[in-house]
Length: 226
Image 1 (cartoon, rainbow, N blue to C red):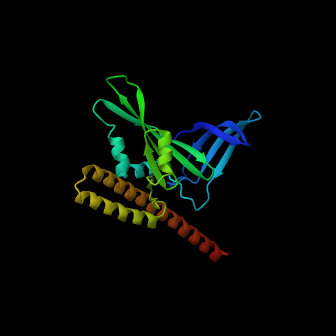
Image 2: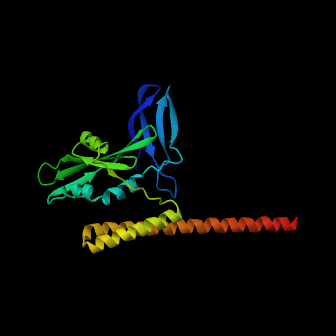
Image 3: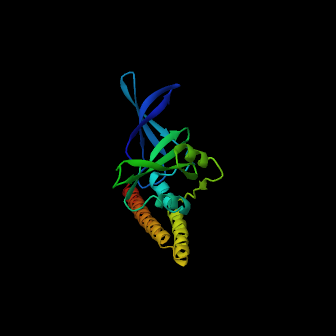
């Protein structure tokens, strides 16, 4: 996700800041973000970190959760009619110790006005996600009983990935038994992504183990020489 401008509270004053959301290498959840502002003619870069026990969804993780949410996905799919193009653009707004995700969804009738029209807005924060026809309705649904809870899987550890793969495989079995071909495709993609993540984690773990063994061997050799 590229950097974007937003209004920042600085000593009770509003200023324009450039926000960059990022994830650490080999990680999926978001632990911090950067804010770039200009103060007294000088560029200022601020790192904002979340609490270590917070598991903040990344845009990729949220997209995966949305694709697996049948009710929300049905509303999005209803816009994909003949002669129409559906586009979306996620925006993340930092609010205190969490992030508010806003994803407007536009429908463009190619053979008519060819102008994008706002049709739906997905809103997510914490472990909840909701959809509405407008941003106001989306936020209202997010704080109501109609909001959908998001199950955040631990995909940053080998054990967490194995648990997620078992869960994804069960979901795939359920979609196969129900002959839901669309959901089946989503479940297959999810399972493939998790297996790929596990392979990468195992490669990283093997590399770290080899480096530890080499360091131990080197230190033992030096001690023997001394």
